Length: 276
Image 1 (cartoon, rainbow, N blue to C red):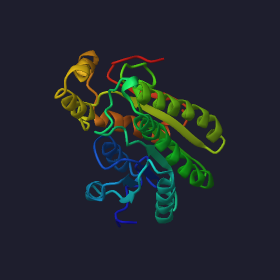
Image 2: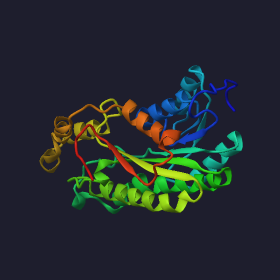
Image 3: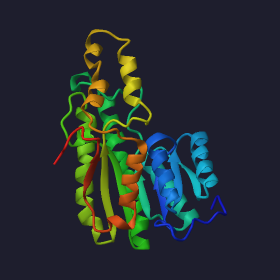
């Protein structure tokens, strides 16, 4: 392991090993820090080595155990190799938080369907669904051997509520959510739980919506109709949602308090919508 520090034995996740994909910043970094604070050893996945090592150092400074585990989560072979390396180093994987690759500045979040090209359509499917599937498949092989585990998938409420401009983000996430429900039945016999945390606007996360909105507002005509979408989201929310709120919910699903729960999707959206 990369640190000689031992997590306190009275922590609820003491002795557990967690992989958090896309954990080099913002929401997923907050999740990694929260899991570490509960005693788990953390594999910080991402592509940015400098950012990843910074998160590792932060966890170690706080007394936790962490390593950087590089891989492109859009590449199934890389993900499998990454998980195998983590298990080789720690001896097991008990928790998977599959997130990351939610958006890119080249493929804007709010796009009408008829404006999407085929590459963008494929990108959304891979980033919001297949990336999670790759990570789940790579981890469950090891979880079955070790006697169980907890899987938490991160998604968007666009997968639960039809949203103009998010047809492919929403459609891909809905597929991921349905996959998790089917897997809950398949994996339960192996003592593996799988649940989804769904979200909308996060006030202190990387403002991918803002970045996209700012870029759109420099354009004219067709792009102008998407102005104000972010502000409308904020106005409709009853409560603020922060990265810490998401991290706390994920930690609940990763810990023993959720042992009786599997195949569920929980929206943490500040009351923006109330999906059934």
